[in-house]
Length: 258
View 1 (cartoon, rainbow, N blue to C red):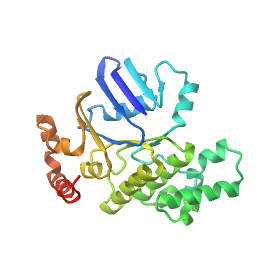
View 2 (cartoon, rainbow, N blue to C red; view 1 turned 180 degrees about the vertical axis):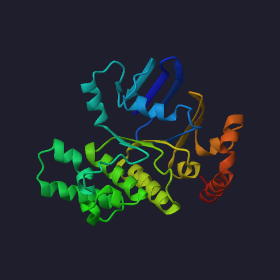
View 3 (cartoon, rainbow, N blue to C red; view 1 turned 30 degrees about the vertical axis):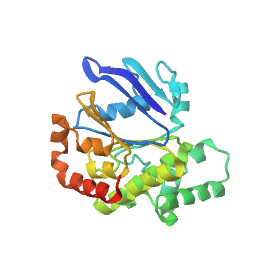
View 4 (tube, rainbow, N blue to C red; view 1 turned 45 degrees about the vertical axis):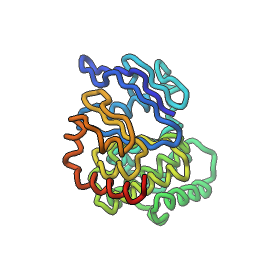
């Protein structure tokens, strides 16, 4: 579904991405991890076509994004749902209008039919449909993130979901609800998911695979088990502050036999 091949990316004279290559299969959930400024969010923007690589190829769902017109890129983006850290909801629209925005603007469905779709999607992300008449700033941060996921899923029935720090700043209960939704999206919809995150425990809960980026280069690409046993100094250093979460995941692996 997603392939980056020897991608280099500069902003002015700053070399941000330095020869990155990886491929992500259909239905796979991949966590992109690394220190701040390592290039993680830039990778999302390359996949979304917001940045064009300086060299190399970015291929999404079989289409090379290089040198596409903005009109063609918009067609590709219809296959991709994007969830930003702050939710990026329209403050002046109700929850229902946010979730149903794409259908309101781009479909010929009746308002009653759109409302039905909104209700179904809010229920899918574990929210009471009665909140659809409320404004985003009346909701908690965790609820806003779930509304943002609902809007992304509703917009174009995406084949790919991209998340930029989806659980940062949330309490444990809200975090679990977000990761539960990601698991549900993978299991019920077979959507390919890419998650940029600093929250290692959350990544271990949802990811099939981990890609670690350091200074614009990939230093690790493999499973959670392989990540935990990696001997690369920067990986050990990065995981150090999360030892408790890593230990809990090791126990879970032992219990499940995975």
